[in-house]
Image (cartoon, rainbow, N blue to C red):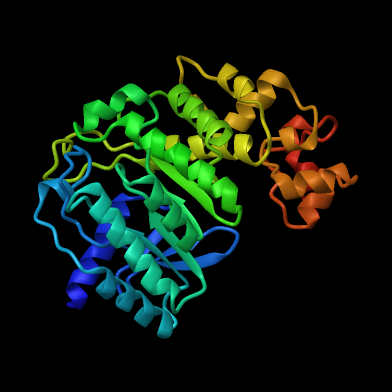
Length: 335
């Protein structure tokens, strides 16, 4: 096994997003920051692909592959060196779906024999229900990408993937995850292919309420040279950040989706969603305040005011104009 091949397969997995990750080419891991920092060895078994997704480079260039044994050996070596905390096994469609899924599961099983930590396995379109069950029994998390927020768009960006096929497998995943309870599943969409913000928010609602996903990740479209979409405009990071803000409002803060839809103009967000909500519906509880997250809101519910929060190190700049009698930022500056 050539290190160069593993490095390429790790780098090429960036087109399959897994949250706020940054690839470290020297250690071959993605560093993800959330509640805690995790170093994830995330790579493809193969970058060869029989699909024809117009935004992805893999179908349009000569790919490389490793065996499940080589993949497992590479991760376990990184783990032994103290360079990786977890692993994400994915792949291009180098063969029929069941063969690809079989190899992903095999890599996961080989790793699980020697590693008790975080394993994420990709579920590919066309995988059997029995394979999905096996993957969930091995992994801590599984995912299948629905790719687009607007169902009718999938056929526009590729002729092979079927929305019906993907959602059917997502229902199987949801059922098996509920059965085992200690496993979670996620999905991903690409923003910037022609969908509206309303399409994305509707998709969020469906994924969280009907399929019970732990997260819906949003990848900004990035044109890649050599693909049919190489000349399409790159999606702005600002738009994706706003959509992630909506995701947090719905998933973490319990905001009503219909209210979020009411702040859209021509089906798009025209500003910070929490500010727009505050201006349209007012402030009824601390969590409604712009710039105030769950931790700060809970403190305010206990009686702490904005001045208290500022002394604790919270940034209260966005919240100040919305609290009666405390409209001047100067009120919070200690002289």
